[in-house]
Length: 309
Ligand SMILES: Nc1ncnc2c1ncn2[C@@H]1O[C@H](COP(=O)(O)OP(=O)(O)OP(=O)(O)O)[C@@H](O)[C@H]1O
Ligand SMILES: [Mg+2]
Figure 1 (cartoon, helix red, strand yellow):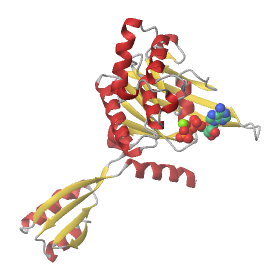
Figure 2 (cartoon, helix red, strand yellow; figure 1 turned 180 degrees about the horizontal axis):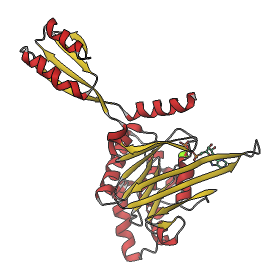
Figure 3 (cartoon, helix red, strand yellow; figure 1 turned 90 degrees about the vertical axis):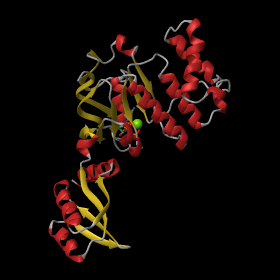
Figure 4 (cartoon, rainbow, N blue to C red; figure 1 turned 180 degrees about the vertical axis):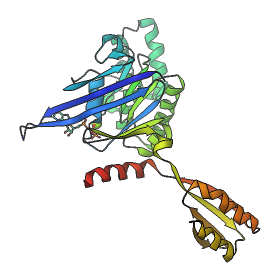
């Protein structure tokens, strides 16, 4: 797998002006993001996510450590042309219209006048702002500003996008649109580094995720590996007490409800045997659903575990 981002020992210390002490916002971070994946960068408020993104973009300098983007050291001018950033609270000149803002950024990237209008129209369409392109940003809602932020990030057709909370403040429809847009970007072969507190959303679209807390990396991996399917729920009918006893003997929890039997089997391995027992006694299987742990559960338990220490 080709590397998009490689981080080795990245550390950032800030001076806390009230206490006069140095605070480690990011602490010896090692991480690799592969080309073409959507990578979720998670962590509670103050974990160091934005600080990490800003170091990768070359906006602030690391206290220690190194990082590379597509093999080039961070801050490399060539890299800046192919990456994009959606800040957590984008700020734009509010007396400009949405169209003017995008035109302004297109000029910054040196896109010729002949292509700019087409490009700006296409971006407005992509983020669902076609009808609002000529309003000034002063009259934009929070969600509309966020959409302009996403459009702005796409202006240079970047290979790698850093999205810091792209759906914060958006209504459910807009959230789904942005989520679909991120998936389309991945389909075009782009890499997305996504920081978000919307764990359900992250679970839906990310290939791999990482969890940061107080500047330290606690977990990183594929969702399938981090969220193993634990229990399996089996719903069956026509199951007598003798069969229920046999299932209990295999470690399953058996509940009776409205003539049905609901079995929670602790692991995949014994599920086949339970199914055999039920069917062997003329029982009827209605459903069999693996109960995967949610990312939210993993997040909470991971953070609680270290905070207890
Ligand atoms: N310019 C700064 N000067 C001093 N301390 C800072 C500065 N920027 C961030 N910090 C501190 O660094 C830590 C990490 O902040 P950061 O903004 O990276 O967190 P985050 O993970 O992005 O949080 P959130 O989810 O709230 O956006 C916090 O303790 C914060 O107070
Ligand atoms: Mg942040």
